[in-house]
Image (cartoon, rainbow, N blue to C red; front, side):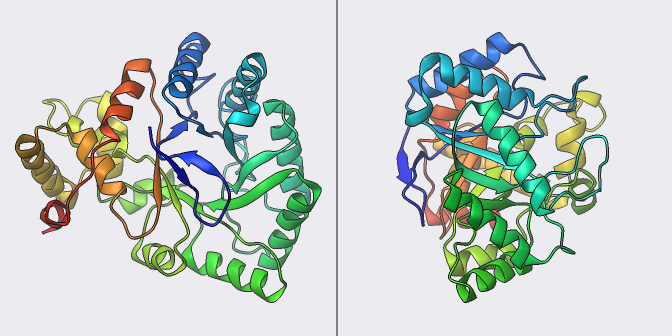
Length: 322
């Protein structure tokens, strides 16, 4: 696995991040620990979690952070890993109610530090935005966390380009740090806007893409494989079976299906699998993109690690979008 500098920081990270949203809650802890061990054994160090992950289970506990914290402590791995976590998401029990007041952000950060059994977070994201909240208030508290040594860098997730520009402007005018990156849904498929927004997520738009082109700030891409759409859309029951509901509702449309046909052609020509093509697409942009993969078993992680080695030519990229 390649290690790169996370642009604009002194963080050295794997160019494939490990997503842990399902760990501790969607499958057995034993499997979660096997995946974490496999990732580190293969040179991985960039682990992505969030204070809200796992709170959908009875008890409303941050099961992902708790599992990662115990695992890190057991193997004494804290200083060899880059830990990214997110706070200030809507609470599971009150969706749509924003939680971006300074005291709410601080409460989530302090909770994450306890869960992860660490004194600092390498990369701290605000999980969602509240456009009604003054941007200066947000920048002030995040810079305070840096001054306190509780976070090294901060970033945002699911923000608009306009709000990121406002953050950059405020930070520059007040001699402060701003967001060093952005975590957002980004993949080769064409998202269905209503489905994405219904899930309280956001995706790469032209405006956001232009923002990253100009600023050269990194993108950390979640749902980087479009939930397997490019492999699953060929399955006989894709259009009706419940097990395909998520990729179907999120990404099934005319544009995505046309790209799937071209992915299939490239797979034949390049002796590749869809995962290789779709990951290679993310590595091909004029700004740094680090995909997140969220395997549910070790074999899926191993397949992603192999696929991440492939890159694409300009001609191949043009063909996908011709």
